[in-house]
Image (cartoon, rainbow, N blue to C red; front, side, top):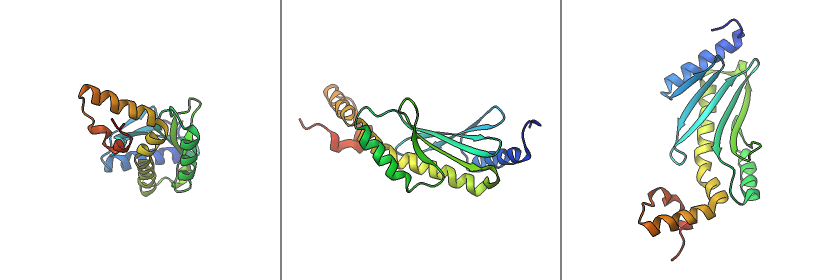
Length: 169
């Protein structure tokens, strides 16, 4: 590693790389200070999480869902209420309205257990919230998708979680 990194940064990167390797998670290194980890889920099949080792802190960033088509107030209220229950990260939106999980912690607190706990928090928040976000922010699109697939005899298997939104007809 480069002399441009502090000993705290080098240590944090070693811990992160060891933790994700031990967990068997797919990951890619970007430059010296970024590790991108794919967290496998059930509702949201994959949450790509960027761990960014800064000079004094570890940044955690994960895309959850695109900007809702509708019911922004309901989606944002639900996300803010959910933030009260999260560990190490919080829901946020970017300038395009896309939904992310974001967090920061001091480099000195980067341990194997803490990396595991933080990635677990990201995965749980993303996966547990995904269908609710879709239902609150994309209900009209989900109904249209039901109609389109049924009119063409297409599979609706991946819409099963939204059977209650299936148009009656």
